[in-house]
Amino acid sequence: MTANLRTLHTPARVLLVVDQPVLADVMTFALNHGRCLTQVAPSATDASGILRDWHPHLAIINMDRAEGSMLADLGYTEQSTDRVPAIALTRRGDLKTKLVAFEHGVDDIITVPFSTEELVARVMVVLRRTYRVGVEFTPVLHLGELEIDILNRSVRISGHELGLTSLEQNLLYLLAANVGRLLTRDEILDHLWGVDFVSESNIVDRHVRNLRIKLQNNYRRPRYIATVPGKGYRFVPTD
Image 1: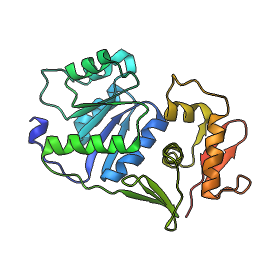
Image 2 (image 1 turned 60 degrees about the vertical axis):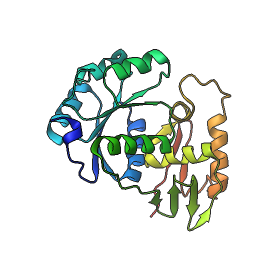
Image 3 (image 1 turned 180 degrees about the horizontal axis):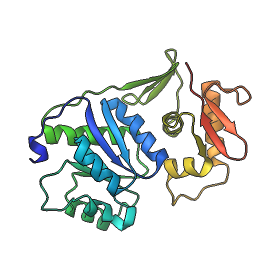
Image 4 (image 1 turned 135 degrees about the horizontal axis):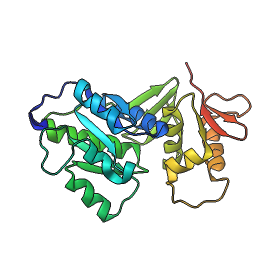
């Protein structure tokens, strides 16, 4: 049976073939806006079992692993029809990389780093195009007092808008998606700016400081962002 003939049950099931926990958690958190269930597979072997047993509606595949062979390992070829739709994930935005992905039969490509709204929009479009049915969209996610609204690009605390910049909102989203996990400065830099970005040494600390000011978050008694001395930052869950 081809993907186009399958029925889309809600919530949609999305398989993330990603071996980076921080990135996988951001994607999982973001897809709550589309009311999606997710499972993460760090390898093609793990992904094959989930594809067989869980029957996802969509797969998002890191094609940079093993120089792009991940797509081929999972049976994504130009001639393949009996498969779920796929979005390729890559850090390389060059034309050659994109052509290779499309030649393997993927439905779309997302370049890392990406914005939350881009991921959600592309997932919803591919699902709607494939299954001819709309996906429920939840623009606002609640984390205790925090309200994160990706539709209007705003963050509120108890109804009060914080006036975050786009980068500050992405930083907050990254921290919140990895609640309780230590994020090193290098991990934050990689996710928000990309591996090729060359910056001054304190750029992460400076943006965290600005975000804390707007959150009214005292670093000595953190409500949202805790500092792990010499290592990085951790999002503190609230009630």
